[in-house]
Image (cartoon, rainbow, N blue to C red; front, side):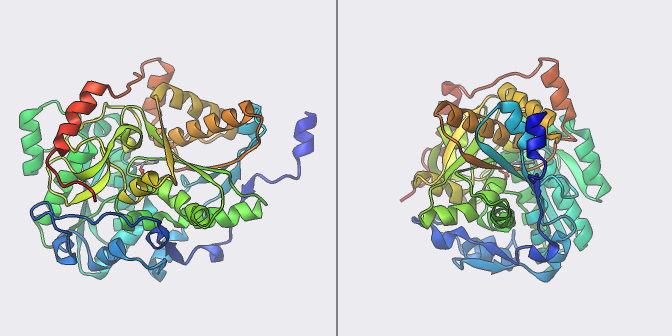
Length: 462
Ligand SMILES: Cc1ncc(COP(=O)(O)O)c(C=O)c1O
């Protein structure tokens, strides 16, 4: 009681005015100590040029993909749509701190206030805008948990494009409400692998019960876009331009931490393809590269431990080898992760920019089992109120561990993490957790070794 009274007057939410919305995206390429490896054409093994990518992406995004400009202006139309939910709030997690009894201060940036419920529309809106500007009328994409599919459906609806979503089959079955949300925003949706593409049919022929994976769904969406002039492909993570668009998160968080009179010792995010992590972490990494001491931690599932156990190698972004080759940490492009509930973290690779920063020692990574992650999610929702998406719960688990490690070391840290989305469409996963039905899956060595055979014979990074 005394403690509560002592805390009145101390602030919980740190809010920015709409006029403080960042007007530029931050491009970390200009500050990276080691330049990322070039993207290679799978046929020639040579670096790809804009013409190779033009069937899939508009020129504005291809330009952003290779840009070394430190900042890129956000178009007015994109800012206008961002202003529906941005700037997003930054919270001090006082109640979580109390529940943990930690001496550390915990802050989180909450991206779940967007209409689709996650960080994903930060790039969906930008991608839909540039595609429309260059005359495309339809976008195709994949989705894991359904967060990205719903974000792109939302963006296409507002900007005026058709949208086709290939949704990983296991999530399609586990998350019927995300599916309905995608349909409510007018997009067409099919479970992947589907009968609608050659890639889908080939996988179904070999594995009729395939639960699907992001790698398979990407193959289907890329094939769809490559086969139609009116359609471009849209990716919700991994690529440089996607990470770029997410940097509004970290720029806002820097200003909000200043309002709180604090600066983080530790910055934490969950990593699937890496976009929400990069969105928060890159503007702080700019400070780290300039000499500030910050521990930057990427959290991933033990069932899909790309950064902690994958190899840094050239690999395809998709299962059917339709995409260019990118140098990244990978588990091999035909790896199908166990059907854990954090569907958005079930991807064999990770963003090349993040991979390079891990190699350079600027980012470290940890992998967790899903029951531990859900236990942290339930502790968080019981103190802060928000029920997190299972993906975001990995960042919560990483945060709790970091706070406990600091307490054990007798240290007091300021920790900032990205709460990338809410879990309102993931309640079946919580039901399974409460019923004790969640399986803890850590990738076994034999399967890792098998999956890595897929990258043998591909070019090696320089
Ligand atoms: C809420 C949420 N967080 C995180 C992720 C992981 O993606 P990324 O690593 O690109 O942020 C997803 C992907 O679907 C997601 O829905």
